[in-house]
Length: 98
View (spheres, helix red, strand yellow):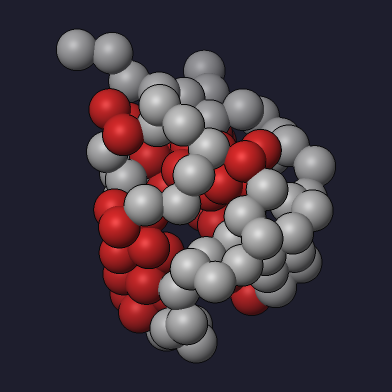
């Protein structure tokens, strides 16, 4: 079994909103999928493409709900969901780092 390890520093901010009804830049969608997968909230097997899917929408909403954030199913550049994801990724990286 392989474990995905998030990078020591998250990649640059997403450029556009990610979520149903948004432009959904494929690179931003892939970032969201990877971030949520690293946190165990999105199935790594579903990361084959940069399009939003039901699993990603559900993962975003569940993450927002569990973190006490506004549950709108969107990740905005620099918004509370993106900031919380980045913080959680840094904590995971600290735990995994030697």
